[in-house]
Length: 227
Length: 306
Ligand SMILES: Nc1ncnc2c1ncn2[C@@H]1O[C@H](COP(=O)(O)OP(=O)(O)OP(=O)(O)O)[C@@H](O)[C@H]1O
Ligand SMILES: [Mg+2]
Image 1 (cartoon, rainbow over the protein chains, first blue to last red):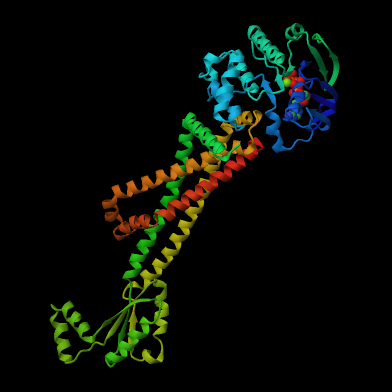
Image 2 (image 1 turned 90 degrees about the vertical axis):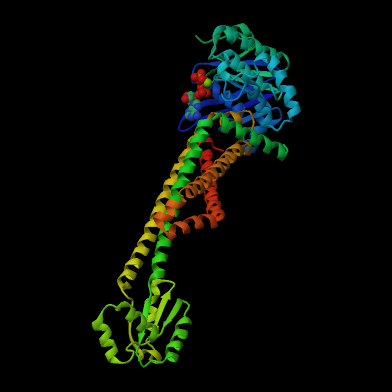
């Protein structure tokens, strides 16, 4: 599904964010990427949805080599990979419904389909009754669920979540993780970047640990190893 | 995606942008309107100056006084000769009898002058030609043209009445006003460009998160640009419409005062804006739209790398 072959990423002038990374993620997996601040986790996530391009090496998603993806192909890739961030990235002047339907509108989906899909994904994240609220009228956990709903509208095969619980308290964080697990059970590959020891330990899924841009451990049903 | 569907969506996003950011939209349009007011004020001044100069210029004439021995035929042929020049607007023939009449009229209460005139026993005046040109600059040419041997021996003198100095002053003033008008227009044009540039830059900067999100959910570049381009066009259109209304309401309301203050020029200004409305406001819209589109493109490239 996703294959990193000897991938390195350098930022100007001399930051080696990732170094010789080899990683294979199988379809339907739930994988957690952990590591200390500055170790390169976000960089790895950004490479996946082509926010950054690798300096060296090759990244293949499905059958698609995205190492040198052209600007005009990026929208196509983004519609196949859902992304979720710590800061939700919702449009404050659009309602919950509009924030979700937006992702379909920009992709040229027909109105009829939009009216079907949006209520479906809002139901999955449990926000059916709050579709006409604005983001500021929601709790952090609810906002994150809107952003997850948005990431699901294209029925992505892959969902990349970069510290989705970073701004949430324990209870809301737990809800979000349950939601990600549910999405994973429906068949979507989930790549979760996180700092949270308890979450990683409770998941009992594959854990990849990064330190200074290198993969230092990769364990099925792993634990949070860092102190 | 079908073109009509994407255009419909762009229009929808544009109207959401405009109404949900009401204050930003309002301020942007207001600055556009203020810019247009400045430009039209410069235009207004230029029309006033033009029209005043033209009015004064029309009142200036040069008179050729012929010797009494110049027959009416000779003077008539000189009149025809002068009329042949494209610079000449009009040539009035004043006969020696008319000259005598207006002279006696003018001194009807002066016994000494009148009695010395009757002592002469004959009309001491010659015929004369009063020439007006389209431009005060052409008087020199006309005077030179009358230096031909054919007529010069019959001409007693020529005379710019008291206008010789006036003409020179007007010409100088004319040049200075045009120069000042040009400088003003250039200066305000530059200020306008900078203000609009900055306004749009701010508007796009405010939307930078939104644009980043559009990119993240897979919108292609044209779809992201579309609403901003429409927005720029909309502000240009709305502010041009506003300025049309403002100018015609202002001119209409101050009609009487304008005529009182500027005289004929007042009428001409109103007429000028009426006659050239489509060109003036069309060009202003085109300029504004082009400028705002260029800045939009530039700001998006700079801040959003699209
Ligand atoms: N755009 C950039 N330009 C230059 N250096 C960058 C850029 N983005 C990240 N870096 C550097 O690359 C390294 C890895 O950054 P990255 O954001 O991947 O870390 P991270 O593991 O996500 O950290 P955190 O847990 O704090 O989010 C860091 O040293 C960071 O300073
Ligand atoms: Mg990070």
